[in-house]
Amino acid sequence: EKRRDADGESYPWIVKTTAMVNHWYFYLVDADFGPLFIKFAGYFPYNAKLCLNGHEYAKRQAAKAQIGFTALDNGFAAADDPAAIQRICDELDTARIDAVLRKWLALLPHPFTAADRAAGYRYEISVLQAEFSLTQMLDRPVTGRIFFEQVIRDNLGIGRPDQVSLIFDRKILHRARRPTPGRFRTRIITAGVTPSLHIDYKSSRIKQYHKEGRALRTETTINNTYDFGIGRKLTNLPALREIGFSANRRL
Image: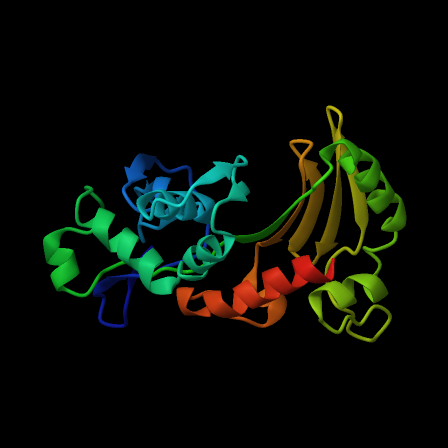
């Protein structure tokens, strides 16, 4: 907004409001990360979003290393060298994510001109959403559906505060003077013939389902890092990884 000081001089002032603005999407195929996209907003302060998939990164790197594998959508059904695949996954760190963004910012048109960048305006990555998954392949897929139906029956109450606190290792105050905010619930969702188990914790959630009739898939999605007392900067990714993967294992 345009405001004026005591001397009548105008100056810009940032306020929080809503507006319908244009966005530009660039759908990319990166040599190291595979398919990804970057979205730019055409309105000050010119926010942007980078969306990438760690499984695609792992598959690209495995192919480069000539490690044989069988893909399972966004995962691995089998691999000739599982330990090497795990090392590749562990190597996907903040430096590599930041580097792929800088690489494409140097190639794509975006709101910050060379003069803007020389004046110090540049993008810094924050984590808006992070998903951490565990894919457990079943040695007898034919019994997987029976197994998962039993998982659902056994976990109908797992969304209660006393149960979900065990999964996320967080103290939940349910009947205190200042209770922990958020809904605590278990949801069973059936899409077609594939049921899925959903557990909510504040803005974050865990989803578990029978993937492609061959694996037990567990996904922890963190939609707000502050749910766990962690900042949003990309440097906090290692701490978020520990929370996500630990929750998968506990469930």
